[in-house]
Amino acid sequence: MARKPGHESFATRLYRGELSYNFVGRRRLWYAVSGAVMFLSVVSILVRGLHPSIDFKGGVVFQFPKAGHSIADARAAVTAAGVTPEVVTITGSGSDSRFRIETKALSQAIGNNVVAEVTKSIADRFGLQESDVNSQSVGSTWGSQITKKAIYGLVFFLIAVIIYLSFRFEWKMAFAAIIALLHDLLITAGIYSLVGFEVSPSTVIALLTILGYSLYDTVVVFDKVRENTAGLAGSSRMTFTDAANLAVNQTLVRSINTSIIALLPVAGLLIIGAGLLGAGSLKDLALALLIGLASGAYSSIFIATPIVADLKEREPTYQALARRVEARRARPAAAAVATAGPAAGAQPERMTAATATAVLDDEPGSMSELESEPEPEIESVERPRQAAPGPRPGTRPGGAQQRRNRGGRPGGRGGRPKKRR
Image 1: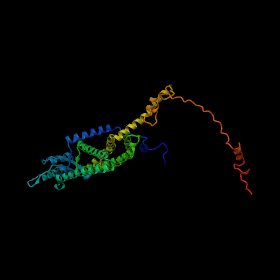
Image 2 (image 1 turned 135 degrees about the vertical axis):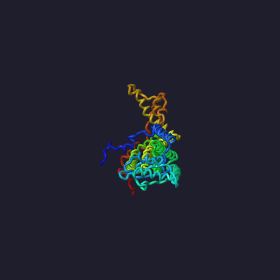
Image 3 (image 1 turned 180 degrees about the vertical axis):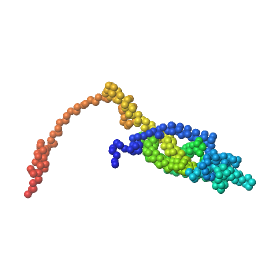
Image 4 (image 1 turned 120 degrees about the horizontal axis):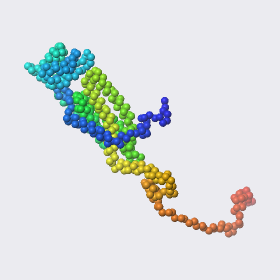
C-alpha cells in the first residue's frame, strides 16, 4: 500500500533532512561523556587490574557432581585439604549440575601429591568415589601464547586498517577510525575490570570480533560523509559539519537496525547459554561481544564522525566555506532588519546605500556600488525637422509611384514588356 503524500516514514524524513539531530554539533558533549568513561576504565585497570582466567595464569581445575550441595560445601571440602580455592562456579543445570573449582598450581610429586589429597577430601565430604572427581592441570604457557598472538594480530589489523582507509578515503578518516577502535577496546576492558569478570581466551576472541564490527559500522558512515561532501568546497550551501551531520542522520536508522540485529543473538547466548545452560565459555564470549557491539555502534556515530569534522574544519578551504555559509545565513536577518522600518509605519522612498551594502555586500553589481548622490537631470534637446528630399533632376514627379501602381515594372499595365516587331 502506497503512502500518502506527507506521511513519509521516520527513516525517509531523516534521509531527506526534514528531521535532524545535531550529533556532530554537540561533539564536545560526546567527547566529555566518552572521556569520563575512558578515564574510569583506565583508573580501574591500573588499580584493580584485570582478572585473567586459569588459562593465562595456570593452576588446577577440579570438577565433580553437585549432588545437592552448595558452593560453601565445595569451598569447605577444598579448604580441609589445606588448599584455598580461587574460583568456585556451577556449570550445567538440573541433574547435570557440576562444581568447577580452580586453584593455584599444586604439586603432584610422589610423597607430596597435593592434588590427590584434595581429590580425597572432596570425595569424602560429598560421598563420591575418587574417580568421580576429575582434576586437570593447566599451564600458563598456552595462555601466554594466545595473548602474544592476539597482540600481534591486533597490531597487524590496525596497520591494515590505516592503509586501507587512507587509500579508500583519506588519512584523517583512518585516524578517526583508529581512535574509535581504541575507544571500544578500552571501554570493554574497563567494564571487565570494574565488574570483575574473568578474561579468558574466549574474551580475546570476542575483542578481535568487536574490531571488525566497529570498523564496518564506521566505514558505512564515512562513505555517506564522502558522498555528501563531494564538491562541497565550491558552494556555499552548508559547512562540512552540516554535511557530516546529515550523513549521520541518514545512516542513523540503518545503524540502529544493524546494532539491534547483532545484539539480539548475543544477548541470547548470554542469557540462555550462560544463564540457563551454565556454559561458562559462552558467557565469556557473549559478554565481551555485548559490550563491544554496543560501544562500537556508539563510537561510529558519536566519536568517529565528529573527529573527522573537527580535523576537516581546520583546513583553510573549509574555513573559507564556513565564512561564506555564515554570511549567506546572515542575509535574511539583515533583510528582516531592513524591512522592520516600513513595517513600523515609516516608508522610505529609497533604500539607503548603507542598508543596501549590509544586504547585498557580496553580490556583483550590488547596491554598495551605487553612489548616494542625486542623479543629474537630462535636458531634452529638440532637433529641427528636415524637409523631405525632392525628386531627382531629370525625372518626372510621381513616375516611380505610377509604375508601382501599374505592376511595379515598366512596359504597360500588365508589367510585361512589349515585344518589338
